[in-house]
Length: 131
Image 1 (cartoon, rainbow, N blue to C red):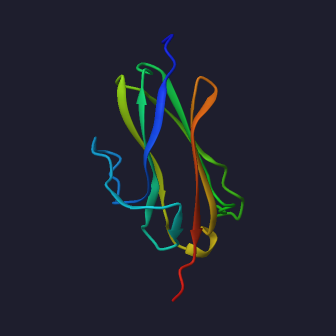
Image 2 (image 1 turned 30 degrees about the horizontal axis):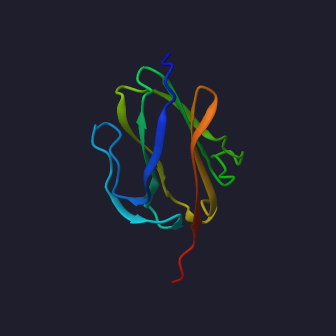
């Protein structure tokens, strides 16, 4: 493990172009905001720049606003881990609105954790746009 303290910054947050998780390309920022219209296929989140953390494990978590699964049970937060590949690395954490929209409204909190400490934390408010 690196003895250097990781240098982390959120460089973009808001609404993005559609993300292809099988590609090395990160999505493009379309609008900087924390207020996200609840429209199907709207991609939102943030891109961080992480320095001095190569070969460490980054934990990500997305806390959804009490979205039920197919059985009506509240979905747990979406969590995972990713290996930091470079000393100057960019990482996208985000999600996309899917049908039905009405149960996706509310606060979506996204966090990144490194060595047990939250290093990035952003909350987005998904709202129903007026007709």
